[in-house]
Length: 177
Image (cartoon, rainbow, N blue to C red; front, side, top):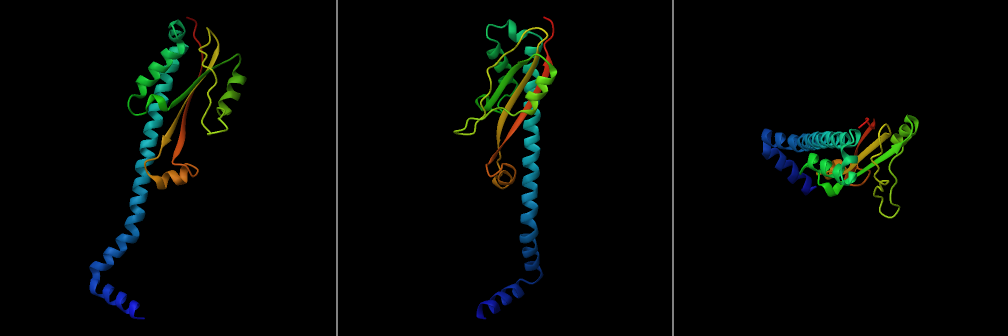
């Protein structure tokens, strides 16, 4: 009983300013968490947009035949992809694939099928890179493991992990070159 009396006297001594402090402690923490979540989502969407632009730019090299005319098509693709994402996403953190399909139905199936994962560590295992030839249907997929900078948001959205996979897919038919 002595403890409750002391607490009651302490709150009484705070007066109205104490009520504001307590209200801010209750409401302010929720507000700060929501603000952090908004910043996290905004930055995640910005990174996804950069990934989409990089995938489209690099896929254009394949579509127009510029990658195929290079000494190593995969290196030409990777160089443009890495230069486009710049310092926002490290090149070592990107996983990409380029697959050739003979018809649009097969390509649609590939889009809806996730990349296979390594059973030991769960990382994506991309299929071999293939730029294809004129008129072939190509599916380019670029994946990035986005690390959340707010552990609370990562805990809810990352499935218990502190990261989420962002993916960009570009489907096209190679032009005659």
